[in-house]
Length: 121
Image (cartoon, rainbow, N blue to C red; front, side, top):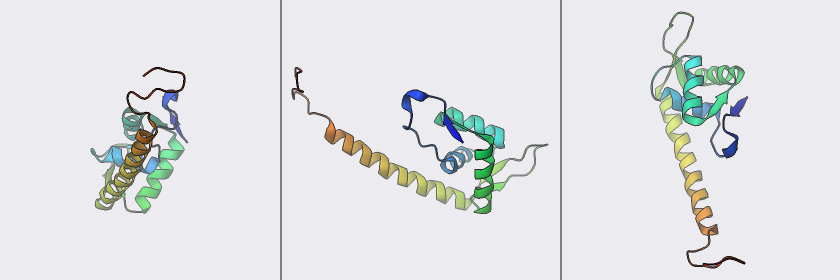
């Protein structure tokens, strides 16, 4: 299960393991533990081993990631061409949501100089 490391922004970060893993691998090949560390560093999300390795298996089955050889007991993975396309599409979808959410929030904010109930301008 994905858990947040920061409770103050609960629900404020994308925590889809697929997007997190693909994003991590966009910077280069990594084995499981390196993925966990990188994801926690850039997203503030701590994936459990079951979540991570289950998602890795599904991503590999879908051809979005591939094994990048063996490094001792560790098995590094890399993003495939299909994985790059999938990440680009997922990020475009997230941008649409972020843009729409930002626009909706902007419409809720009172204009400068408008007095809020019981307040001053």
